[in-house]
Image (cartoon, one colour):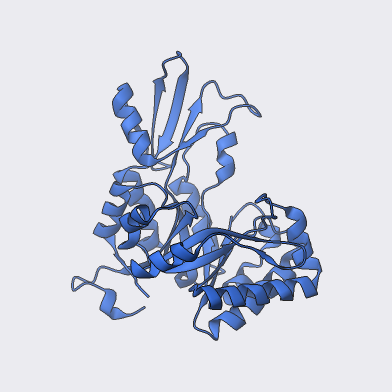
Length: 327
């Protein structure tokens, strides 16, 4: 990182990556642009031959550079229908010819589209695929790094650790994104989207295996709204933006509480049909607590899911605590 990006008061500069889908508008991206190092466009897929399933990204890439943000392509095991396919992941790790063809297509796409790099978002890695996962990342990094572009790997720590060689992965990739929140929590009982206590526990373990300066901590930009009572296997929480969660509390007159362990806000309200809801979300206080982990563990930065919605209080805390590294 260049010292020219650090203010005179020596506030630390960090990397900030933000995920966006192909539906993001120029206006929405511009809202975040000054506070992003990278924007990761979600997501390319691939087929069993190793050919990529593209997204409509020409205008996104052009807008990113115009706004001073480096665009990254994201690769997920999505088939031609846009559905996640574990079978595609198994093909990737069992067919070296297909794997090398896919890596070649990634490199060509990064060059031709003028992407700044690629994010591997492969999901569950089976224990027997641990070595092939590292080989895939290493081969891609070797080719892209020579061209001055980078490779980020996104993983969910604690979910399939038997399939992750953290030490080797930290050496193979330029950065490792720890998705310290889980989309699957929409199926569980009401709880914080990303409990600070849980994230601290994960980071304490991971930094013994991966250089902290290579770690991007996942930061969720959404809240969850459950209808009570929670019925396992039936109740699914609704994702809402943090801003919507705050507005909903104000509109319904709900009393907001703060969990001192999870460092997250929550409240209950009754809807127009008489159903009771429970909402968990982030505001200034909880976002500050999450961002402080970047300093506590000396991390490279954060990765936000997603920038599709505004989060002005989150940006406020980011600007008060850090400067954003630009490439």
